Length: 347
Image 1 (cartoon, rainbow, N blue to C red):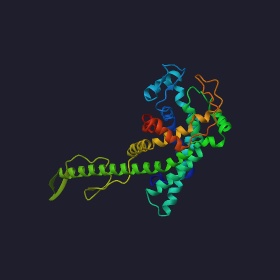
Image 2 (image 1 turned 90 degrees about the horizontal axis):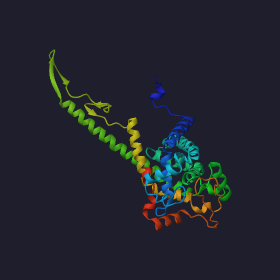
Image 3 (image 1 turned 30 degrees about the vertical axis):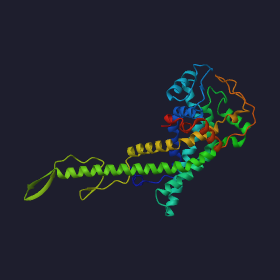
Image 4 (image 1 turned 90 degrees about the vertical axis):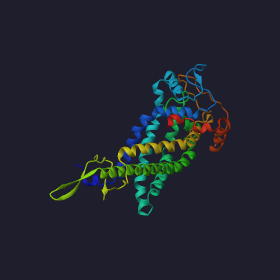
């Protein structure tokens, strides 16, 4: 039998929070890795530039505007393994990232509640704090993931270790934090929009369920006949039995639920996550472009064992673009569509 503590909603300790968050993130990451590679390849490729997979030829060169076509070209020239490029640093990132978020939110939210900061503000503030801390601590792994997933046929880096060594040699410690500013800025609207959209959809759904249940109760009360037995008059219901969604009734009226059922929470969470991802996609596109600027590879030794053409060193001393310079460049050369590239695999 389930213990009373479990029924009452026993609070998880820090290590349980860490484990739950880490395992959930690990499973999710393995499943979405192919979509992540497609998304990154489309995001880092300028809209008007041609994309080449394998040996350079008219057949292998195309505009990466079609997700389906990019998928076919990667399978043909790089194999299915390419869809898990960058997955090692991604797995190494997602476990501590999710664990830090779960643990920090689990500890900060009660602390804020004790100081009279009510919901949803305590959840939003704790999520912003947790997201900022998690992003800062795991950002080097995020950058490695992006660069490995973006390269074709291992043209620059042979693997995770080679990428880390080359970045350290050519760019130093700061090289691991290219684009981190955009990532940190993104945390605030991500938390606010994410939780706001979830609460709005949740309230709308619970109101809808309550209205439907109230209608069922009214119909059930109308569909009754009065019978006389032993000199007493009693109501005998002939309507359909109430559904399982009607959790509680008082004086024949439905009491509106305050919480979602597990499956309801799953779908509403997925919808709110999709909303926040699409709205904040421009931030992600800017961050990825900052992470894979060609100027970062000017003194990088190409991977001579690459299956395809290697990226040659430009040997031009130019500082990498700042966030504002990158935004301006994307807008001038590609327009608004540059900020929403990769929207299909993102969804």
